[in-house]
Length: 553
Image (tube, rainbow, N blue to C red; front, side, top):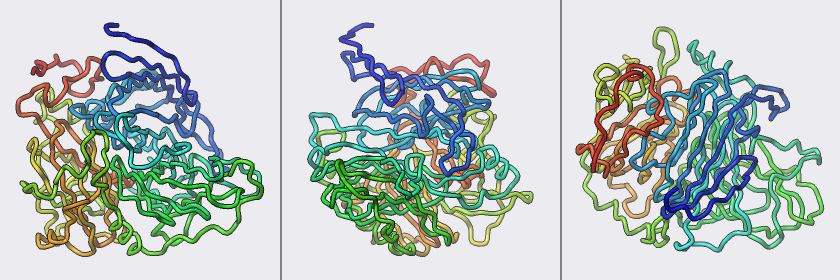
């Protein structure tokens, strides 16, 4: 291999990983076997999805600009894909791992993902994007550390921990899928897990994490669940927020944090209390019957069980909205690049297009469907990205079947079809999410981070722009919209490809609350987008078609 300097073989959390360093950025090679296995996280045996025998799956520990090569062997009896939530895949939507971009990995076969965590830092996670597989596991943490040359705005912690919190169902993923396919809701979850477990509280629990007295630890907390917002807190300890979905934040202290589905926060916790066991707690928000998940954090040489009295969670969503308003971008810190985050003055860029998206829920032919601007998305057999690349989009989907204006007042008609919005490369766009429903929404955009400039009750109007945070809104990839409220984000569509914008609430997404944004490179140039990888799986109408002429410089 040209330029090979050295090769080392490591074992990381039972995930075989080879590290190859070339003259370019380092390569990390993983081999993952995806299988079924029996798990009992809530005491009820059920079929789980394991990666290399693990539930949750292995953590990926990388650094800015590393190349990750992950060979996934699908040993399930169903097609399977993994999605890397929050990884931007610059110029490379080929690796996004969704049914709109990729053909699924068929049972008994394998596919190798190859992507670079280019110009990113932060806390992310991966999960299965096919069927209802996420309800059975297959998810894990994905961290991107800062390069050593770039200072981080806090002292190195004693250790760095990943905390995956999420609601959980004891019904199998196949049963949940049958509910949705028959037009019914999956209803409420059965419990809350922290790293695949919940403490019994009977004195027999093993610690999830340990802390040395006087030391400070970093906890990366991600909500990997299906539908529930969770409040996360530590017994007897405050949390200092330092990072959120790839951005350094102003470092405020919090007693608890609301983490909505798909969101990730990094906090610092100092072991400054009496040496004994303490609970970390994740409990459901905005539903009547509160579900609680707990995990033990143990002081080394500590004596004494955790107190059964767990800290109270906040009530109502006004508290959560007020907390959102305290989140601020750290303008002086450097993220993946040496220049300070605040050197990008997003607030002074002219908006070239406003897209208002209104979510709705209704029945189509007697079955439950969720829609955006009156269109309920379905994935065609031919992935949208492949149809576009092979220039047969007109045989698979139509562009822009929704209006930029939202949903007309009183409109009830829902169209079930692929939902693809055409965007102009490098345009600066405003997207407004308007939620007329009584339940909270959580929205995620692939391929980008955006500036979360406002969340407010009521309906949006252009006059509301006067209330936008145009100075230090956090650059992130997921935003919640409270009931009967709206949220606004700003971003430049400068990453060519086909990118998913979706509800992070799995039932909503599965039943149509998603769309794709097509951001084509007008020059069809390698400066803007990589060519289709040689190992790309082909299916649907493109299965036996010859490859188009490749992009050039």
